[in-house]
Image 1 (cartoon, one colour):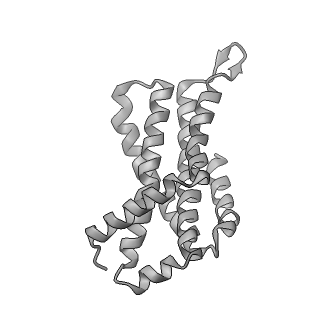
Image 2 (cartoon, rainbow, N blue to C red):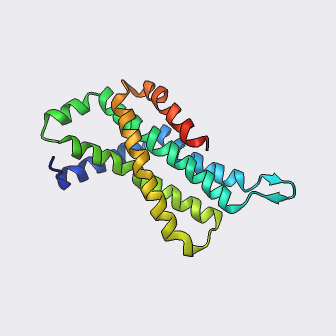
Length: 172
């Protein structure tokens, strides 16, 4: 399977433009940030929640919501509009398609993770390990989101497929 960078970049640009207009996607991106702010005001017997716990729970929410729901929604949307069939019948390979679709939530996830990191006010010396860990974790979740999107019949059915995965990963 040969990946052609020119096609991936063109599809990536199209997907960035489409997703920036999608209200559901923007809500998914704002939720972890909203909860980060909210958790900072929770009082536990005279003390606030520890910063590390807020960071952990907010990033975990970002890792579960964005790649699983977001990616499955945009893949299912392509299937629903029959653009996926058109792309596959043209000379776009499955690798080109999946790579371009996966890069969009990956980019958004990293931006949200950085915003969470700075909102919490973590020490800058932990930024590189933090980005490394969240990057590695996001690849697994992106894979799950891609599979969920391919299995789903349409956008409405993506929630039936993705919610159990999100619950399983959010429970710990």
